[in-house]
Image (cartoon, rainbow, N blue to C red; front, side, top):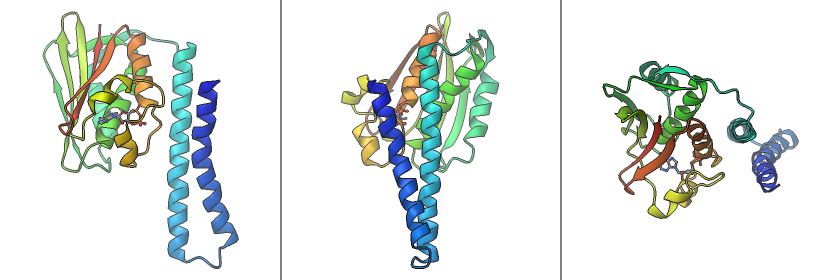
Length: 220
Ligand code: ADP
């Protein structure tokens, strides 16, 4: 019930904005300038996009926790997986570059291709979201005993030591992320943890504040 309360609260925020601005445009069509109209419509579009991301994240986390996913266990090739992620984020507004580095012995792993893709979309999406223009996001894969460690490194603001522990809990957003007005649901990393746990792996972050962050997933 705590989750449902949070969900309805989170859904209501963008809905209220969409409704409010749509109402203003409708009621004051003649009074407001074309410029204002465009500005309000931009807000409506942004909030609709946020709403759609929220719904996707809610469904993902509910399915992860409710066992609603038919897990596959297949051989997954890392190079095409990383290639897909780089292509997806090619036009990202952060303008950060994406580099790929796959060490010998980490070319392939066992897992669910769709879910590993979701994992990397979330991690790379965050890395880019917290990047500055001219920055670099690096997707790495390295062998580690009988496991492969996938990692996503950025040169963004990094993570305060006090926040490290709570990163992977649902709805957690660091004060810094909130202060910098980045949009987010606080569910992305909880989804990542759910995916890595289901693979029998471990996920963690390493960071020195001001010097970027690295998120690592060790997958057996
Ligand atoms: P959000 O939707 O807020 O990005 P996540 O669960 O993906 O939710 O991330 C939770 C919080 O972890 C973020 O609000 C941010 O404070 C922090 N975080 C995640 N990735 C990074 C990163 N690459 N650099 C700095 N902080 C990050």
